[in-house]
Image: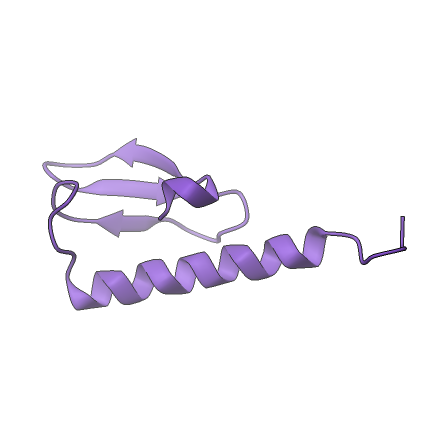
Length: 67
């Protein structure tokens, strides 16, 4: 989901990965390997980050007819 929104994956320590996005303040750290179940608090953090980026993307788009 993070890749689809153009988050950039940075290597972390061990099985951790860090994710950044220009429209997201801070970074997300996710433990575990791809396809493994995320911890509930990590799922919540990811959903909040996605929501923040999507809201900021909507704010950047010009309204219809306002170019």
